[in-house]
Length: 292
View 1 (cartoon, rainbow, N blue to C red):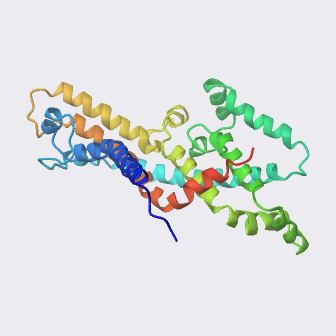
View 2: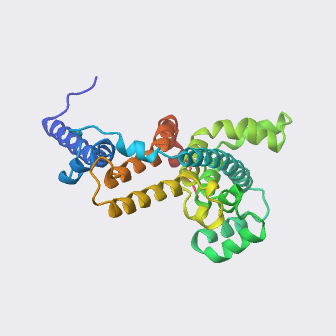
């Protein structure tokens, strides 16, 4: 039989839930402000420091953002790079993590040392550019994927997750005649969906936010991902606003609302994907960090 909580315990619960609710609301307020600000007028946004519900609703910022077909091409590019890059990175990461999780692998400690070493030291921007150029990847979408195909941190989490799986599963599969490939794709991968969902989200966010590598490796503007195009739109709106001071408010591009609309457009796709992976996210991240 469950005993009734004491008065002090009830007071603690009330204070605890109240503080957590306030912290959650404070954390969520900037998102509401950005979304509401993107749907309001530039005048209202200039007179109010915090906009939660627009007094006057306006779609001018989104009309301006989507006024060029280049944005849709860049959006398709980013979706393709994100989807293809995430699959490619997950495939390589799973293969390498599974190999490093095998205790009978010769030289495993040395390979892990080299992996961790890359987290502390790197060749730098110019050597990386020279390597990409020597491989003939300049002005190709592969330049956005191959140089960052395996992230050392994600690899370590995946490897630790594989190590936490019971050894008896692999031994039973070998007795039944399963090969290493069969064990990986028929047993290990299905049991590792929480970790795979977590790492996939990490990779997807990285590829979706591709900006600097695209500037370095893509000379053709038609191949630019959405992050660069959105940046161009923000710069263009700021320049036009400075050069058209004599124009009326309707014809002038709403600089601040354009910035907020750009934030919404850049963030919304990842926010739409996250709910489908959220149930696996915490479990995968925690289980992958139990052992080193």
